[in-house]
Image: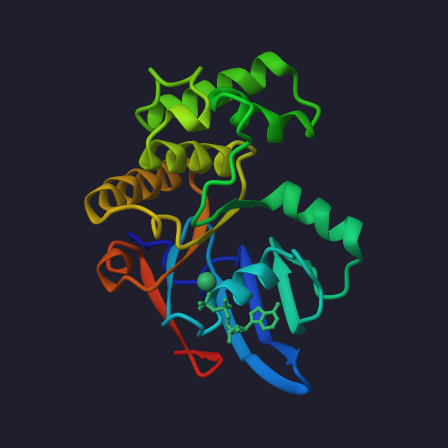
Length: 233
Ligand code: ADP
Ligand code: MG
């Protein structure tokens, strides 16, 4: 019986949100950005998070990425209840399970492509040679085999973003959080980079939650969820 991994009810979730809320105080006014978000993403599933600008996509990814506390409700990552963890424990869950890609690459300007992908692996204690082999493998899979020694400033926007993708996948995360990963690229480049990103994530078997306001790009993913008025539809 063939059973696609896209039914989150059938498999253990890599991320599960239960009634997640997040509010901000601004000038004495409380803005409820997330008003009770529920979502389960299955291992290997690629989910598009759609919503207009200001709808709370980045806020939601920041909460799931455990970048800051301050949310209400429950967030489980790979079966770990991360809702009430302190800063160090949140960092440990992040390191062990999550990779990030942002709209802007945030590569280290003084390090070349391969070093940018090696550095996040070194904190795991893996020998440098293994980290380099892994970096090379990922960068080559993304078509950057001839760009390994280039610094970010010597790469095109699409190439920089592909290095950022390799960096996100370097430690074999169960979950990749991508916030408008091609939002800074022209349409043709965005298409190519997104296709490469999705195919590598699939090959690696990671799950991904990809924020975008682009319906056409969202249609290439396994499932689309929409953020509207602080809840998911
Ligand atoms: P999106 O990524 O969908 O464009 P955001 O998550 O960036 O949306 O923002 C959602 C809402 O939350 C916006 O109204 C924004 O102004 C507000 N917001 C986000 N971060 C903060 C913050 N640190 N302080 C105050 N308001 C914030
Ligand atoms: Mg955003």
